[in-house]
Picture (cartoon, rainbow, N blue to C red):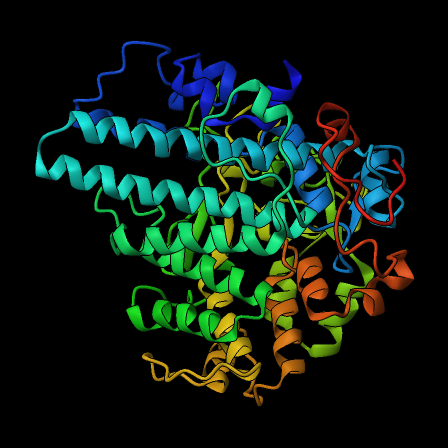
Length: 491
């Protein structure tokens, strides 16, 4: 039934239904529908791998993701072509309603991730009962914590997108799923905190087998970000400070390196979504289409994409007013200019997102090839430094273990960009977040939590008291009448 597909909990998986149908995940992360041997340590990571795979964005979901998570901000415009993506244009102009398909697909996407994480967490209980070795038990415990990071990420996005949402944290019957009520956002944040605290307690500093697995510091960085939305300044500062004090992360020497294929999983990477064609040329591939969906529209294969989420004129003016040349040149991919590959002067838009620039040698497939090797950066170390600075300036009363001050954290980011030091005022931190994190799906949410969205986005169509939250999709309310209408929207 559609209701179960949309809510996607661990119930179906634990009843040993096909994980292909349940999660629609890629081949390398699927699990058998029966006969799983929970006594074998080599099987422990399989459901966690499935949870990671659920985070990858297909072509359509990549379009939905950038449409909802960035295009409503003042940093990005719809892009693509005039006729393409009419529902994306609604998000660009704040004319969307509960029937907008992009919004509904983001609801589905993040519940898919939460569901995959639920399946992994409940699978760990089965492994824990069946495995007797001490090393196996430790692996189970760590994988459970790792899965809770993924679930926390999913629910954090659901809450900041929609506010009060249903909490699905266990196996449920179809009847239960169809009758769920929403949990208040404050309680959802408590739940997210608990998942991240659990992960911090049991996850290692780094997984020895694979550097991009989410670890203790991933959980800390994500909790710092969540804490900013709660105005929990002490916790935001404490978590960011712990990541800084660990010494595990540092800024890449050059801003370009923070986004290059070559340095994926590098010293600046705290949380990424993996994407790789494994040098194959045909489907199915374990790829994320985030880069492709933003590639230059109308360019020659294999250096083109759908051209969505282009830099806005206000973002370009912002960079020009700062003389922020290094970050400007990386963030803006300019039509008619070359980096390693020509961006044709006939491309549909004058600028594209340079942060997903993927050189020709990595685009190995003959069609829809652009950006498939590009990992999606969710949290970079620069963001951690800026979160720390913001929390300290906002009133955090902690003694930093790292020895950093707000000034030191802010100016470490500026120094890498070739800019001189400034005092860590809230205005300077807000400007720095915009310059450093432009087109990385932070700006809209930052403006909302700062209380500046109406001021900045009002001229673009934003309505105060309405557009701070996206509407719970109408299709979901038809399936479950317990879901409330989002204030300000007509159903």
